[in-house]
Image (cartoon, rainbow, N blue to C red; front, side, top):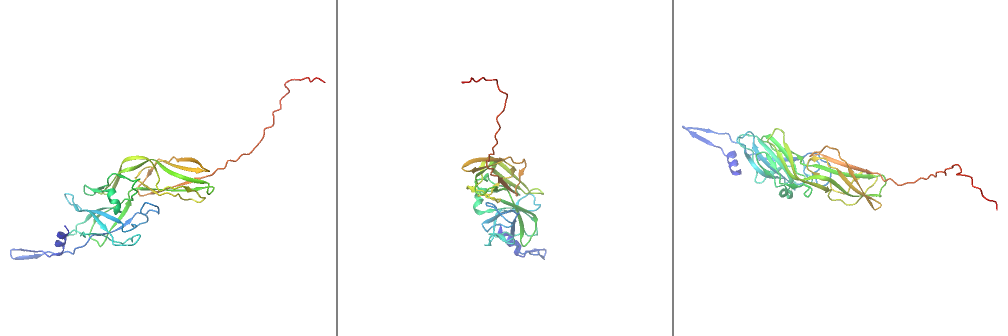
Length: 318
């Protein structure tokens, strides 16, 4: 495909008929490249943070379709675009290019791009398929076991440009946990669990509509603990608990159970969560303020009841 496109874009074509010749105007071969930014997210553990990709370990997997082509067909199917930059994090204007290079179609046709971004090591887990044109679906994926911050983006009706921008969004919601206590050093958080967490399924991005659509098809759920948890001695300042943040598919908010100990005795508290949604692309910070209530006794003594004599008792004189 590359040789064919390059040939048409760089060679002058002469048509000779009836002793007349006509020379068609030639076009330069303009390579397709992308710059990638991500939607804002605040710092945490398994997810992409900030508005640029963290490093060159992240690869863009892009498809392109000609706008208005009938029948619909890919101009190119899933293609890797990588950056040569070694900056950490990447700069907003770093370019991602294909190898071999991909070029804009001759004649100025516009393209619809659909892309995902992830670490190259996570591609096997996601195993995306791109069918029909403009639709990407991952394999069934246990998001709890494989904490992958999958990003997706589209740029529709794009025309020849030096660099085409892709603004990526997060496919999941992010949960973070903080705690403080009224007295430092007396309370230890042992575990944090999400009740009936929806954690396994396929994720689909549909770019065939005017507004891009996404959906999770959940196939497994159950109680799951946050990952990376170690005993956390709570201080008097609100601070992150010693565990990883948790990426979860979009779903209704679930109850959260915290197990903690005081003087060697374990207790549990379950947050009866509100009936709303953990929305993809949003971070939810849960703050637990644990008050250590000391057992204190005060005393009071009721006076003896004074009643009338039950009767006269005669005591003999000795």
